[in-house]
Image (cartoon, rainbow, N blue to C red; front, side):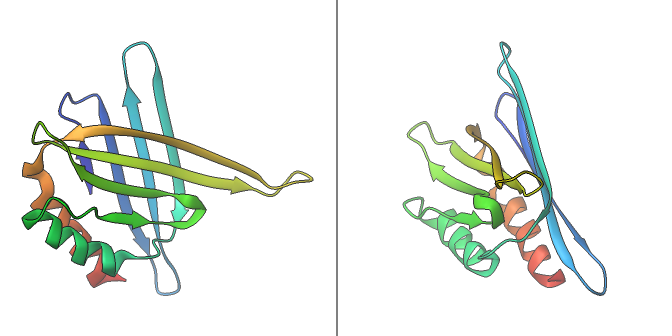
Length: 134
């Protein structure tokens, strides 16, 4: 599943990986604001509320007052919010942690971008597909 910003300069992609023993997701983001570029990726995320997110996203398509939030490990998330111009604001954080030093070090990339509400049904279908595979 890939969500692309209105201006085409930002995107977030979630891919499911699974074998007979383990299912995980990768989430990556690319942001180009012209005077800065940011990318982040976690290749081994678990989503903690995928079923609830799908139900809330279905409600959001009809009632934009609802705020669907897909929460993952390492404080990663994506969240959709209706904004006054009719577009959807996607808020995100991609997080990870490294335990190889004397202390655990947390890393994250957070931000937001606008995308078209026309993409919501495709996003819902992709998330339902994730549920079918989990």
